[in-house]
Image (cartoon, rainbow, N blue to C red; front, side, top):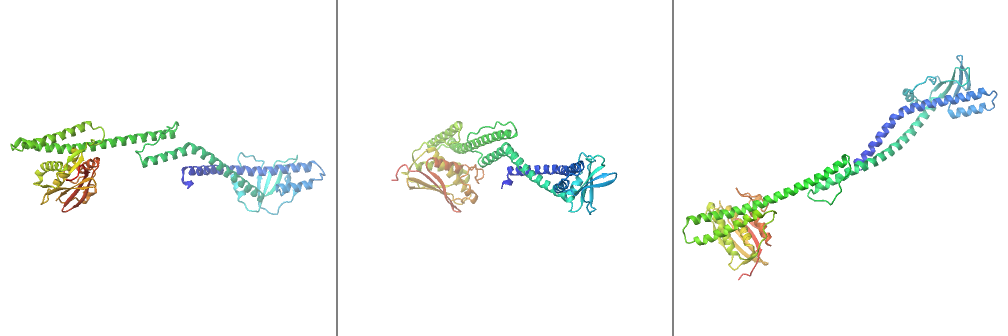
Amino acid sequence: MFTRKLSGKLLLITMAFVMVAEALIFIPSAAMFRQSWLQERAVSAGLLTLAIEGVPNFSGGEMLSEQFMKDTSVSMVAQKRAGMSQLILGMPPISTDIIVVDLRKTRRLPLFRDTFRDFFSGDGGYIRILSDPTVSGVDALEVLVPRRALQMALQDYCQRVLLWSLFISLLTGIMVYAALSSIIVRPVEKLVKGVSVFRADPRKRPGPSRLSTRRDEIGQLEREFVDMKLGVRQAFVQQERLATLGMAMAKINHDLRNVLTSTQLISDRLAADKDKRISSMGERLVRAVGRGVKLCEATLKFSQSVEERPEPRKLQLATLVGEAAGDAMVETGVETGRVSFTNHIARTTKITADPDHTYRIFYNLFSNAVQAMQGSPQKNLSVKAQIIDNKVSVRIIDTGPGLPKKAQDNLFKAFTSAAKGGTGLGLTIARELARAQGGNLMLESTSDAGAVFVVNLPLAGKKA
């Protein structure tokens, strides 16, 4: 509604204030009107008396007197000489309810009480007006008028003042409204709209806007609002950069910790074991250290929150999966006990993927599976592969207790791991790496018998 808006309230308040001012002015103006009305009757009666007595045997005196009494509502005119009243025209009334008003007593302000009395008086009664005479030898001029005539004149005057007051208040309200609407209301409405748009999407950068050149408080408010929006957007940008950088560093730290832990375990075994398999372990150590070096280089080069672009090549899937499973069980299998691993992937199954990124996918999945089976009586981990629509679908099956409901709801969200001591980044990193290579990572099923994860990767060759 219009009255609920600031502009509507402003218009109504302005009109109300003008009406209050007009009401305060009306009281003394009505008293002045009453005094003027009585004065006019006295002056007219004096002139009529002068005309009648100044021209003896004036033939038009009777007609003039009748017209005068009709126009002025005067009932009687008399002259007071030596305490006696001499009638000029009219007859004295029978009613004794007569109020005397002596105009010979000068007042700066009329009596407001008499005005209210005459305004709300009944139909009966007369007003006796005493004024200075116009004929020599006369003490005073007496004029008698009905109070009803004065009441009607006051009511008519009130109606005219009321109509003019309404017109003036409306005109003043419109002018004030137009002025303040242009100066205050419209700029405030513009600010309200800007605040609403900014609240809906504070990160959205609007089009170019011209700064206000006003020097008053509204102009200062508009400039402060623009500065506030710029400051908040800059804070959002910095917050996003910091959050992204923190995510990236957490990812790198997560994988770097896994790689270096694996390297440390293998190097310890190489240092203590003189078995013939030392050469194969040495090769594994070289590969693990190489991966650690690459992650360190990525940390130093990290200025944007993006993963290193994958460098896809043709890979033998069974070998890469076996290597990732072996490293995962070497790292976590010491604490969880012996884990049985079965690789059902054929040697001829090949994929097109980045070797390091794919290794990290399976390493994270195997590490999570081994840790999940820590309290299980049977610790069996198996991998199967199936070719579907030029994709290799790899299923990782464990015999753990499955995932709780809370973990399923936030499975691939960062920092939501339910595992004790975990960072909650393993599955997040694995899914991002899979999708970056044109694949995906999903949870196929989970129950008390274990969980099944599926990794889809691009197929490089046909299965023989």
